[in-house]
Each structure stands twice: as C-alpha cells, then as structure tokens.
Length: 84
Image (cartoon, rainbow, N blue to C red; front, side, top):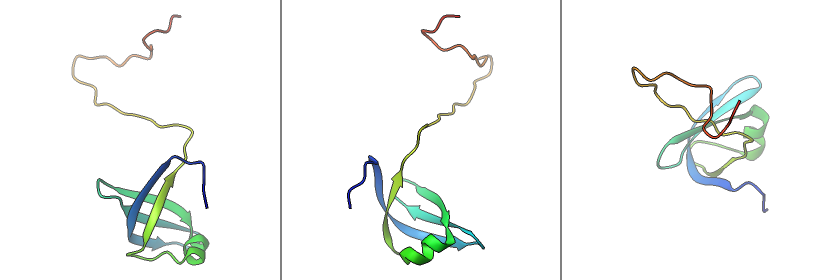
C-alpha cells in the first residue's frame, strides 16, 4: 500500500498501554520515542505488540516550535516582514 504522507519513520514498539477505548503505543525510532494514541480496537485488529517493527506515519496540518525566552528578551507577537 502506498500513502501520501511523507513523514514515515521506521521503529520498534516498546510499550502498549491499553485503556477502555484508547491505547497509547510508544515506538523507539532511534533518536527518540514517539507516542501514538490510537483506538484499542486498532491495536487488536493490527495485532500490535511490544517488539513489533512498525512505521510511524505523521500527517499534520501544523508543526509548532517552542523556544526558551532568555532574560531581558521580550516575547513579541510581531512577525518579521509583516506590517500592521
């Protein structure tokens, strides 16, 4: 199966925490651990278990960044290049 999502990362399942409806699946992707919240029925249907090799597929409309504000530097809501 081919899909349009470009952000695909191979990894290994390290944890599966099942709830009544949802499950959290943690995947080690070498540089980090990615947690995915999926339905418990999807975990069962796909047979996901610790040790499985999976592909993490990230499809998002936004990617946010955060920075630590240094002392003396005021956060601004103005964006460079935009005029008011």
